[in-house]
Image (tube, rainbow, N blue to C red; front, side, top):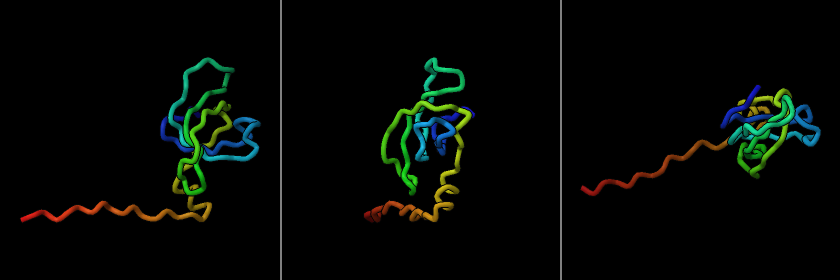
Length: 95
């Protein structure tokens, strides 16, 4: 699987030994830099359990070890619910 911008990935030890502690990662870009066969550089954001970006990172991983997740499903499985978005207030028109 080659990720694309906007994908949310579950990054574990299967992608690289440096990820003994798994993380959620939202992809900004996949670099086309030459690397070892099957390895890729990704730029993106590490996400917290609520799905909010907490740190921008560049990671070097094996593409075959990445697992794409659906953000809402991942949050539900952790028992976390986001508050619904509140629409912006529109001022009344002067008549």
